[in-house]
Structures are given as structure tokens and as C-alpha cells.
Image (cartoon, rainbow, N blue to C red; front, top):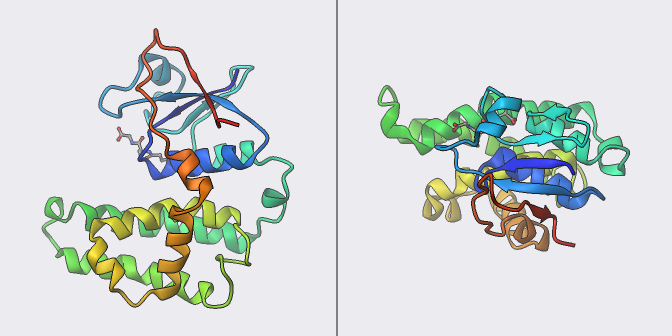
Length: 208
Ligand SMILES: N[C@@H](CCC(=O)N[C@@H](CS)C(=O)NCC(=O)O)C(=O)O
């Protein structure tokens, strides 16, 4: 059985679970705690980040975007993924994510203010706002790989200061995020599971 090491609130693990939930594949979910990573996970992926997927033949996939591709292989969603979608995901992962961390933990980065970090992050929000002004999702009216990959990070950005976000000017982004958070899909990947311990039984995910 395929195994997925996951952490419920990690946006990278969320994008992996979203893709699996939308696929015809299922995994044995092992919910971990980042402070106490299981030895079995570190052994197969020493870099110690989630998600980590171990295929039936032992092959390890420990980058979230690769887990998405694994889950969605041969699916229309993956086949219709364009270069500009990958570019946007790259901007999310390599630029926006950095500002998100600094905004979220501004006290750890005193060289600039929380407001400064938020404004840097907002440059990406503005970009998304523009795209969402012409379609319900980022590239069309349907979820694309980019929506699934990026939404968990925008959710995190919003919840750093939800009062600010709710009164912000990003009407389309707000609507896009609310639709996502209220969706069956999102609820289905945010169920709470007990922490996996070596002795515990794995949990089948998704519950179908
Ligand atoms: N590039 C990796 C990043 C994954 C990542 O950084 N995950 C975080 C949790 S959200 C993590 O496991 N951090 C290790 C730690 O906090 O110890 C991916 O896309 O899978």
C-alpha cells in the first residue's frame, strides 16, 4: 500500500492531499508531528519535510509538486497544466512563500516591519486578483493544478490577520478562497486524524 506522511496544517501536505482526493488513488495516511518526525520517515527522506509518499515498490517522492503529479498522472487536470501554471506555482513556492513566512513570523525578522512583509506578499495577491477577475478560478472556471497548489498558501496568508484580509481590496481572491475553504473537497482533506505511531494502524485516505 502506498504511504503518505503528512501534517494536517502544512500547505505543502495539503496540496498533496487535495490531489490525491481528486484522483482515483488512495494512500495510507500517517499524520505526523513536525517536532517528532518518525524515524521511518527520516530513513526514506532524510531532508525531513512533509509530504513524503512511498509507493508500493518503495519509490520515494518527497516534493509536494511531484506528489501532485503522481496522484494526477493521466488525468485531464494534469494533462491540461500549462507552462504559465507551473510558473505561477514556482512564484508561489520561491517568492511568495518567503514573504508569507516573514509576515507570519515578523518578530523573528526585525530588519523590516510586518507591514512591509505583508505588502511584499500582496504583490502576489494583486497578480492573482487580476487573473481571478476574468474567471472563477485562476486559469478558467475550473480548478487547475495551480489553484490546488497555491490556495493552501493564500489561506495561510489570510489567517495571519483575518480581520485585515476580510476588509482588504482583494475581492476576487477573497471569494476564491472562501469558495475553496467551504468546499467538500477542502473539508475532506482537513479531517483530524490521530498522530501516527509505529504501532498504530494506518488510515485509508481519502475516505470514499
Ligand atoms: N519543497 C518541499 C517543502 C515541504 C516543506 O517545507 N514542508 C514543511 C512543513 S509545511 C516541513 O516539513 N518542514 C520541516 C520542519 O518544519 O521540520 C515540498 O514542496 O514538499
